[in-house]
Image (cartoon, rainbow over all chains, first blue to last red; front, side, top):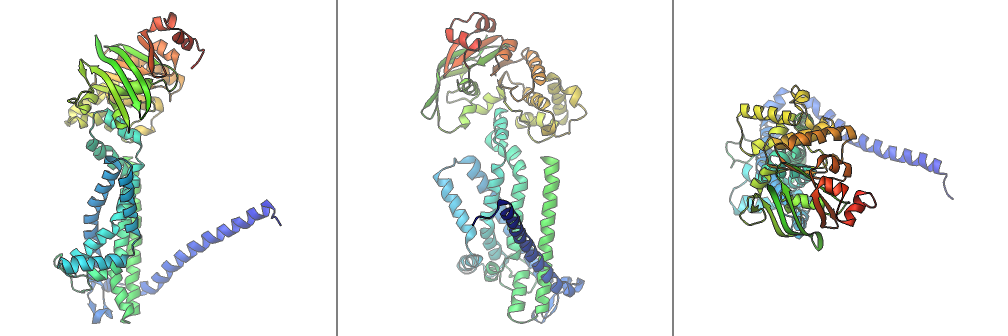
Length: 278
Length: 250
């Protein structure tokens, strides 16, 4: 029996609406649930104090700093590499077998579970290169992990810059590099920034790759060769070892708020930049 | 005097021969128009004159294009330097999404002019040369891509004039504009030809008749006839030219 098109139209509308509503509900539920468990724990002392009794009491200051430093190192390493590779792939070599292979490689790399990066980082940086559990080992591992994301998003951003801009620039006597520097990159910047933000998001929340490479020291780091504990590693340990579920939720809440704030900032920066310069 | 002289030029996109043994000379400080039906190779020929075709994949070229008696396809030619002297205006106005001021100074900055007073001076001069100064002098900071199309196209010309090329190549510069804007751009061409050698590709035969001094008719990659515009449009030697001019095909 064939449904009346009008009826099926109505039914489908409802079904699709439910799918959308459910998605939003699940998303909000997770955030609200985590925040409602975590926010009561939050206060200035929790943010600014050192943990006591393995994290059962006290605050989470070193983990906030650890997260920040590790992410910074990862971004500082991955951004020039990733954007540089993206520029080379899109502007300097022609679309062909080699670009396809590289792109396939980058995509596969993006799909690899982070724990494999962790194991790789552990074997290469921590053990073989004798960097130990350190900010440097962790930062390098995270950099490798987010590199494909940065390359892909930068490539897409660069490709959206109209060909005519490049053409005009060449016709005015600009060299390829001048064209890239003055026309392509500025116009691709919002997209590139998005890629970097995605990379930051992945780094900030990453646990598996970090626990293997940056360790879980609760002391404040004094050099790149010191071990740090990130927020995500901290609440993983707090909850798994049954130290304090309350403080785990508190840390998670800080992380969630941090990521939300960062995304909003990124959105704001992009919006401002797009308006002013594009 | 001939500014650009093309000799025995053959051009291929892959296996397709787009230009067949072209020989043509573009004289100093006049407007030369290239006309012909779509796909006849007129734009390709235009883009051979400042080597914009280099950017396309899989093209092959033989023959000579002499700019001031030097073959621009010989090995020791600096393409970047060439394009500084032989500039181009494109079919669609294509200002950068920057301010009016930054658009005009783009080429200058590329070529190393950085002092603010020099830049301001040249912006004023270039906008005056393209008839934009009165409209734009208070709006130098507005975003160029938000201007009306005609002003955008003028701005593209100002951006080019700023680097003081010797030749301006125009690839159907009015095809995105309405008739009134077209008339204004044509007036501008008359102004510009006092200082620059202009080669224009156009689809619009009336436009060729109105603005050009010399005219070349192309068909299927060949230059069928070349001569003064008045001759081409009133008593062409070739029957095909006659047919095209009178609108029998094309």
